[in-house]
Structure formats: structure tokens, C-alpha cells
Amino acid sequence: MSQFEKLKPLKLSFYAIVSVILFEAIGGILANSLAVLSDAAHASLDAITTFWLLYTTKLSMKPPDEEHTYGHGKIETLGSMFGGLSLLVISALIFYEAVSRLLFGSAISKEFTLVAILSVVYTLCVDVFRMKILKGVSKSSISAKANYLHAIADFSSTIIALFGILIASLGFYIGDALSSLALSCFIAFLSLRLIYNTALELSDIAPTREYKAVSSLLKNVEGLKGFKSLRMRKVGTKYFIDVTILLSSAINIERAHSIASVVEERIGNLIKDSSVIVHYEPLEEELPFSEKVERIVKKNKGVSSVHQIVSTKTEEGTFLTLHIEVDPTLTLTQAHQITEEIENDIKEFFPYIQKTTVHIESSTRAESGKIVNEEKDLNAIM
Image: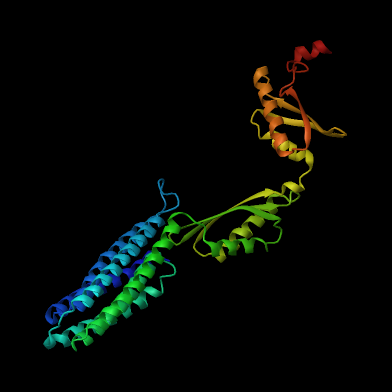
């Protein structure tokens, strides 16, 4: 989703809320309607929240840099967390106002009732407009989703305000108050759910549905023997996916790269806004024993070569003998330390091996003779 597509609905929503504040403030003051003035205050908080969401969304769309190698998507998530918290504050304010109405009530100015009703009807139209423009992008932008939930809460509270004006003009306050209590509980539920979801995202929890979908996809790729270390994280609306695929040790590098490319393409098609990194390794179970030993030994940086790997099975157990080549400048202590590390590594990987014997050789052999270049030397030999 482009920056324009993300920001435009939030900008329109912000301007629409500002117009609502003006209309409801004027209508509420003229009619002395607490319900309308409360809704105007609610809209003011919404305007502040929407402005913050707009700002954080714009920041989140900055490209990755040295300090934020995964991009700035978490800033949008933080903005949405603020949106959820502000929604929770709104629910508390509505609850407080509802209790106040139950206890005290208030009379409205009947001569300006029509003005109040018109301002509330205008607000309802604006709320419907906001819900419509935000719904389309709420699935791909967590900030738009937060603002969409605000629009739903605004629409509900405006309905309550309209209901409150109508029944308050008849001197019946309790219906308005009870409805407001129900509304505050509904908004609190929406806000807590939003806070919970953004908190999970900030903690880098793996998205369950997408994780299962990718796992299922990997099981159906031709040439794949398995996979491991599947890791996923979500930053804003973008998914970062890292996986190691296991391939037959008999295939060549070109074929391995081809399979990895297929995996990367299929995951990208499954999860559109994603960055996929695929590593590949040979399936260890398919490697010959000697090659497994060679891989383990060569992990030690002091070893330049390994050969003559021989395993012997006896009644006492399995014994392993191998020869390694090391830098001839190493001291005996350093060379002995290398052999101990190799023996420990092999014991850890092959617990059934009773004993490993490592023979040390120099990685450079003595020269067998001088290279003769000059003609006089050649003649002397002749």
C-alpha cells in the first residue's frame, strides 16, 4: 500500500472530525445539551488521536536505515497503542457521564432542540463517511484500523446522544443513561482488544495464522525434504520471514538455489507485503558418515584438512580414527587443544562413539628438491 493510500483516509477522517467538533459545540451550547456537548468533547479527543495516528503512520513509512534495519513500522503500532488507550479513556468518560445523568439529570433548552438534533444528524453522516473510507484500508494499516474502531465508537455514541436529546426533551433521563452505560462497556471492549493486539505485535509474537499457512506451504514444495528455524515477525503491516530448508545432499548448487527461489516466490505470493529470506542445507541424515565427521572437524578454524577417517566397531564399542592437518607454526599446546575440541565435538554429535583418536600432521610438507631454472644447473645435472 502506497503512502498516499494510507494517509488519505486518515487525513479525511481528521478534517471530518474537526467539522463535527464545531457543529456539535455550537448546537450543544445553544440547546444546553450535555449529551451533545459530551459528544463534542469525545470528538475533540478523537481529533487529537487521529492527528497522532496520522503523524506516526507518516513516520512509520520512512525507509529502513542503520538504526532501524527492519524499517519504522513499529512506530505505527505504537500510535495504534495510543489510539487504543485513548479509546479506553473515552469509555471511562462516557461511563462517568452516564452515572452523572442517572444521579442528577439535566434539562435541555427546548427552543434550540432542533439545532442540537441537526448537529447530531450531521455528526452521524460524518461517522458513516469515516467508517466507509477507513474500512477499506483497516486490514492493511493498523493505524487505519484504530481510527476505524474510533469511528464505530463515535457512531454509537452519537446515536446515544440523539436518543438522549429526544428523551431528555420529554424529561426522561434514565433511558439515556442506561444506554450510555452499555455503550461505555462496548467501547471499553474494543479498546482493550486493540491494546492487546498491538501489545502482542510489539512483543514480536509470530502471527499464528500466517505461520501455519507458511508451514503448510513448505510441506508441499517439490524437492523439499523438510525445513527448520521458521521465524516470522510483523513490523507494521510488513512480514519478515526467515526459514532454512533441508534438501537432498545429492543435488547440485544450481538445483538447490532453484528450489529456494520457488519457496521464496510462493511465500511472497501467499503473504503479499513480506520480505522472505531462504537458507538451504543438506539433510544431515543423507550424508555419509565420513562426510558428517569431516563437517564437524572443519568447524574448528585451526584445521586446514582432514583425511583417513576410519571407524571400527568392536564388542567394546565404536572407535574413530582420523588425521588432521594444522598450521606447522602452532605450538604443541595449541595443537593439543584443537584435538581436544574435535574429540568433544564428535562425542557430542555421535554419543555412541567410545573413543576418538586424532592424529596431527603439518599442513605443509618439506620440499622434495630445489626447482632448477638456470641453464648451467641443467647442464650440470646432465
